[in-house]
Length: 388
Image (tube, rainbow, N blue to C red):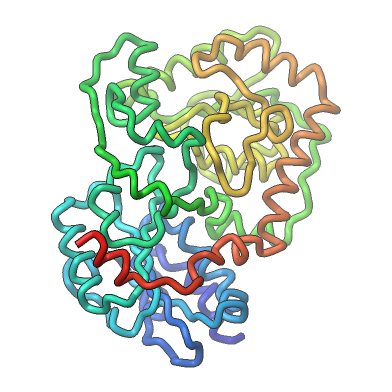
């Protein structure tokens, strides 16, 4: 239990400047040998990626109890540069490179890993904003599972050629008259049986800790109608055009108060969020956004472009139940905002349901059950040899 608490403390500080180095060293220490299974996680040291890793740290004791496994966590560079951190000791390996990793570097690293111990089960962690599977062709021959924070319900979309590199670039590029070259990621059909969901941003350290203990927020006395601080307006391409369009529309809506567009601290931003009745959360570079969880954890009802094309874990995107859906082109945004503001009892129910789904997921340790597939008996050598 003491080591588990130390793991959690290290997990909270692994990306910190001052305490990050000792935290990373502790999480990457040698296996103790007290459990029969050993799981080694090669993680990308970024806030986005760590939100996918932290629940393995937070629920480490329960994972150990249920699946007789202990985890160690090592930055991905150790694998990509050939410093594998004793992969021979691991029965299960989770690999989480960033999506800009050169394909030849990733392929060589996975090949070394698979050859070092063919019986080791290798799985891939995709923490990326976009919903495509752009690395699937490279990783498919080596992996048993491919974990992602959201999946298309219609799996045929993974094989579609979009104008631009994502479904969102395709849609908003066409909406704003921007030209993009067609992109087909040549996703292998064999990846489909390996796809599994991992949780959204709610499992990042600052969210998971708060949801473990925090009571549902009170909506009484909120003075701000709509939180809509939309960054990225000075970026480029369809993403920036969409953000500018969304911001303009909010600013033109009569009879509402909304947040300004200046930059404020995160603390001030969250105080503002907790004072807002609604939050407008358009897409970013992908459909899922930090803002989604920031709104829901604050008891603020989220307005978001319709998410019915995706599966997520847990399901935080049930139209009219956990959020208010909007058209992708924002044509009904004013109507959705005024309808929400005029029906506070409905908004109270939506905010309570969204918060409860997150809080229940964290407090009931559903992550432990959801990740059960990783600990079933599999032979990575079978998958690797079939593809060789």
